[in-house]
Amino acid sequence: MSLEEIISLDAPGTRVLLLGNEAIARGAIEGGIGVFTTYPGTPASEIADTLALVAKRIGMYMEYSTNEKVAMEVAGAAAIAGVRAMTAMKHVGLNVAADPFMTLAYVGVNAGMIVVSADDPSCWSSQNEQDNRYYALLSGVPMLEPANPQEAKDMVLYGLRISEELKLPVLLRTTTRISHMRADVTLGPIQRPSLKGSFEKDPQRYVPVPAHARRLHIALLEKMEKAKEISEKCEFNAIIEGEGTSEYGVITSGAAFNCVMDALHMLNIDVDVLKLGMTNPLPEQIVIDFLKRCEKVIVVEELEPYLELQVKMLAYEHGLNVKILGKREGLLPRFHELSPDVVLNAICNAFGIKHHSGNSNTMEVYEKEVKEILPPRPPILCPGCPHRAIFYAVKEATKGKAVYPTDIGCYTLVLNPPLKTADILFCMGSSIGTSCGLSKVLDSAIVAGIGDSTFFHAGIPGLINAVYNKHKFVLVIADNETTAMTGHQPHPGTGITGLGEKSTAVAAEDVAKGCGVKFVKVVDPYNLEETIRAIKEALEADEVAVIVARRKCALLATRERFEKGEKIIPYKVDPEACKGCKICITRFGCPAIVWNGKHAQIVEELCIGCGVCAQVCPHNAIGEAK
Image (tube, rainbow, N blue to C red):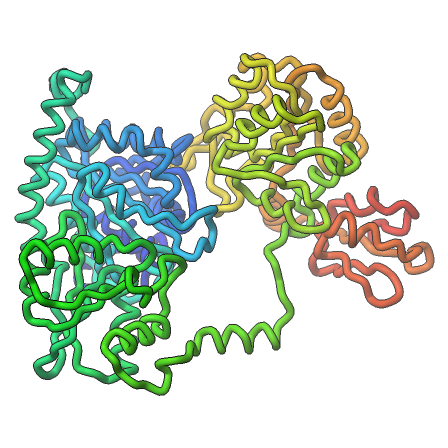
């Protein structure tokens, strides 16, 4: 069966193999979610991509929102109007959505609402590894942490129930390892969503001006007191007891729980484990009772000592004579994902256990062996990627003598050789804001790069700022007509919604003109001469100038050509004409071009026939293969 068939299967009790994110999507279907919103971001992307397959058929409204702030507002409003809602985003996406999220906790909801935050320990696909558990404390909303796909699905249903009981949104916090874990999931019955909402006017609740907000804050604190009672009874909190009476204990949650159980299995020792599924508010009595039965406890969690500090505080307040260890003692790191080896070593050191793996890390040994066998392979742009042509043109036009603010997207990879046209990056849309700052304090040329989806997400306010405050720089919008980095999701520029319906395509050049930019040009990056000339002209402008470099993502374009039955004619190097200058390799860097020891050579299986390399070659040694 296809994923579309599996995810919408109405057969309670059936066991299916699902990704953690797919399980969350299934939970939304079983929970009767009527409105789902997102801005795609790894490791959360598959939740929306899965629901997009079936949303229209099952009666769910889903959208790829312009950004996470908008996604939070759309879902929050639906939940206030009595329709169950969910919004999903990666951890840094919650930074963007934090403004409405914080106030939504005051205002509350009437139907269940789940906010999924997918954290990314080890920065597998992110610019930081912030710990979003603190958003639960900061906002004052309940938080659930699944340890496997089954719990990920079931916690959606549980979260909807407590959301409606407390009239609060519930934070479902996952991590990369849970989102991308695959395991058996037992399906439950499907609840068909209702999109028929109603709105009863109540300005004192829904319009949090200061006089209202002060009262709403007190009400929120009262709700969280009630949430403490719920936390004590939460079905996802559990004690896994050792075979005998143990003086040692482990407190853990989420992905770290799996590492703990693997480590204990390898050690084969008698240790009690308190697994927490609801981690805000903390089930204090459960924790206290667990501490009373132990002489020594280690708190195992990824990133910050979120649980550890609260557990130590409880022990102090209740005068418990138990040694609590963790990150504060240096047994566990405050960075990167945990592994069974790291946890095993921490447990051995905490409890004074000698083990043959206690002072070694088999994962590190494995990684070292792999590096010795396999050559390094940094992430690269695909063969034929228009971004490579764009930033090759940028470097040629500026002679490499410029500052290059960059942004979040595939094109961020131009920071690597040979292009090296990415110099500063904060977050989505920051290429424009940082260009504004740099333009006021530097004499050098500034050429910023931003993708089309990122431009719509967070670039427009910065561009308006640049026009209004008279900043001077060149902005290149790398428009590949999709949200490529996270899986080719649609955005306002594509003219297609998440439900597959045709809509108005918002052109980046029209937006730029609407922002007040006078110099706006659209170019085809596969035409290097045209692109270089346009960038040089933009550099001469006395104000902010915008170049929209538009060419469809090479992966999508190639797929479309295959579907149409079009033959792709690769390019070939003429060995007689090749002078061995290696410009095509050392300055352009398409992975389809290699050096065979005598001359450049194109790997035909990788070449998509874009023809840019032929324009790069100064000796006319590259042309279409006959």
